[in-house]
Image (cartoon, rainbow, N blue to C red):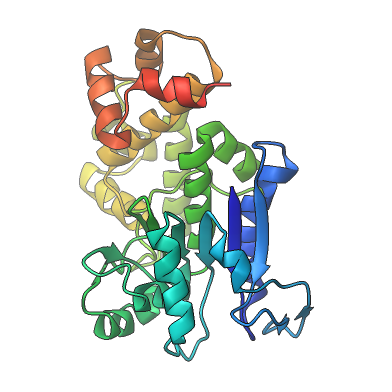
Length: 313
């Protein structure tokens, strides 16, 4: 897997470091062989970051032309239209089967190339309106953390890039590899792409603590029914108040969140144990093996057995 990350004069170190951290950890931790991560600029020249740090060891478009993943971690804040050669490079990379990633404002050059026409995408919510006006052929999901079409992925601002890159690792190497990297980086191992980019109203500290404790409790009791009523009682909130606060904090409903966590745990068990499918389903709280298989296939477009064959150690 050869990953080429685009850089430019005045890029923020954080935006550049986010994909570098996640993808380079794969190699450092020995989670896969053949992974290389490189930085390139449109003209092959070194760049100075917005923090004033010089980056001299930078490749050119030739590296991008051979990449399996082409990553645009950001774009200049003035949002200039990409030069024609860069747009052509993105189209050519996509045509030959390379995966394209536009993180935060990096969605702008990806959309400018035309490869997102007729599809959905996201970007930093502050610039979503500009994105929509400039690229009317792309449907903007301003509330999403990331949108993955398999061949093209876009993400929201700043820390959402970490979520998106972990998602790529998870889809490519499995949940265990993504969780290992997340633990090392001390970040959440999995935030779904559909979660909200930001919270409309701040949650009072005591309610935030209550919700956090409830989510931790739920993760430790996935084999239980975990109804919304149970979760609300655990949080010491009324059912209506809990449901509203839960949506504000996570961008999801309690039922959808619980199902996602059950499926996360199922993937981990399929990768790391030899338990039969029935035991995995019971341990993760599914009412039956049939229900487990149906939900698993609906989410991942593969069966639990096929997933285990692909990802198990």
